[in-house]
Image 1 (cartoon, rainbow, N blue to C red):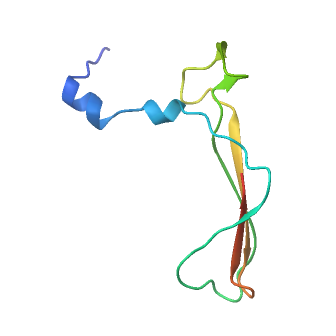
Image 2: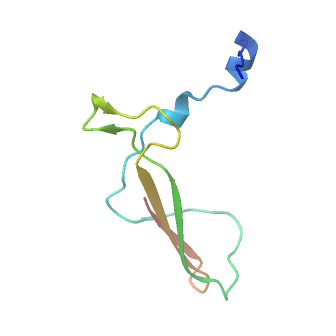
Length: 89
């Protein structure tokens, strides 16, 4: 089965950012947010998502598929009693 993408669809389904590499944050940062966190909520949330697609910015060691990139782990420390959320990625 083959499919074609016309020019209008390509603008809607632009996947350019899908292959943009992320960078690690070395330090943990406090996130500013609106609203309040429930007092009972305290813990750590880990998220896994797409990360780097190149090794040492070398095109010969790049991947070109959405599921081939290196993982990017995000960590959120949530503390309801102190109303803080800290992030490291």
